[in-house]
Length: 79
Image (cartoon, rainbow, N blue to C red; front, side):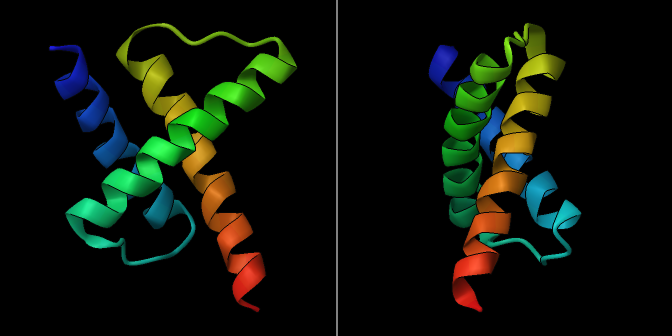
C-alpha cells in the first residue's frame, strides 16, 4: 500500500505544482515524475528548515512545494 500512496501523492503534487506555476500539467506520467522529484526536493528543503510533515496533507504540501521549486528551476533553465 505504501507505493500506491507514494504514487498518488506524486501525481497530485505534480498536478498541483503545474497549476500553481500556471502550466497545463504534463499528463499523468509527467505529473508523476514532477511530483516524485518534487517530493524528494520538498523533503530535503523541509529538513534543512527543520520542518516535518506527517499524514496525507503534510506529505502533499511538502511534495507540492518541492514540485513548485522544481518547475521554477526548470523554467529558469529554459529561458
